[in-house]
Length: 240
Image (cartoon, helix red, strand yellow):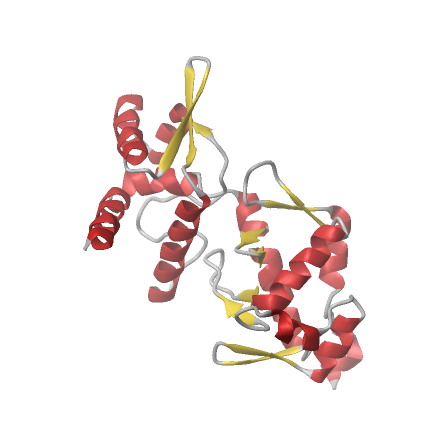
């Protein structure tokens, strides 16, 4: 019952649209001034301070004093993961869902987070969703409901990047690869051992870079070009 009580407390804090708006504005892990959060949520400074105090007391936000200004950030990465999970639930339950929580006044997540971000140990966001769709279109992977299978064609091409799919099975990970839902635009991206291996490849090649203490990822110009080449079908392949 203790855990149920904690869940109820967190749910109560997030149930207020103004508080959830401020939490959503901090989803990338950056710190924002209380005045900026008040503006984003459409609150007066005094009302915003009261809401921020409740979120901080509830363990969802962390206060950072910088001179006379107060900045807030998510108290832990788990807070962001929980909010993303709620966003995925919302996206799955509504037909007309874009990159914002519907009818709640919650603003869009910061653009870098929507474009590319850490999702557990793999790449999430629009870049990841685009890549997953190309892998499907090119026949590198096949999707059966939520089960993702690497095809012989995919294994051959991935080996050229130093990713050997047969070896991934023996890493003790949960799955070789799976379909991970994405709140950014309701498209899926690739998770599991293969998703993590691709993420490692992109970072090692300098195609992706971590942004300060946030979960957002910077896609370099070279990275955008090189990741965009992966699993691109030639015109004759599309015709065939």
